Length: 335
Image (tube, rainbow, N blue to C red; front, side, top):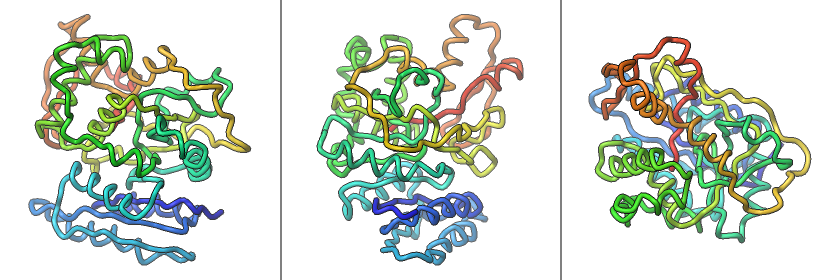
């Protein structure tokens, strides 16, 4: 298999994860490979060596390929490193696939993205192609191989320069949505609690309390009226749920597993029709924090705040029975 679609591989300090994902990239044999790496953190003694080992995969490209490298000497942090890496990528290409070092794609992921990028290239309403699906059960009766929604899942995804150039990292107009919650509800799920939850995430990201780039991308798509295509089967396994994770190291979360691959010509939906039930399922299966918020409202006596040692900012987890933890899906941010 060989793909003509350019691939951006975002790496940091996890050589084992990096090698596993790189093996899938090698199987796809992209004609253009871009590798962008954040630099080591000064306060983490193991980072320089781990970053060096992760970057060694650049020397393992053994197929005809235009290789482009963007290695930072200093640590930029999750938000700036990913954002600048994608900026660099789309400074060279018109469209492409983006994988982080913990997103292990299935065999059909690259073909799916290539076909979707080609099919929707001239439709500026479509801004994002997801590879993962946190709620496949909600999509099983659609009769197509993907659905449209406002949700930009970023565990393996693809987009175009035309879409990324609209990226709104400053969250312009956020105060207007905060002042009138119905405006956000009209763009997303008809659930004011969910919308307030997201508006809080947007504000905290804008203010620098959350070090991530993807809420800005999600906000961009929402406020631009963009559409995201999500496969009806999950094409990505997140392998980053361990002690090396930056944002997903909660031990009680079960990683999303690759459920299937797509084969044959892609079956396209009849039109861009939003499904309230699918969007509700997407929201509630991708945001663990929302469930905690709802449970605290329904049964506040079940909860106490316990500090979790993960990464800044400090987050909290609910004190629930163990069986309830395993019913929850892992968090997947949106951009």
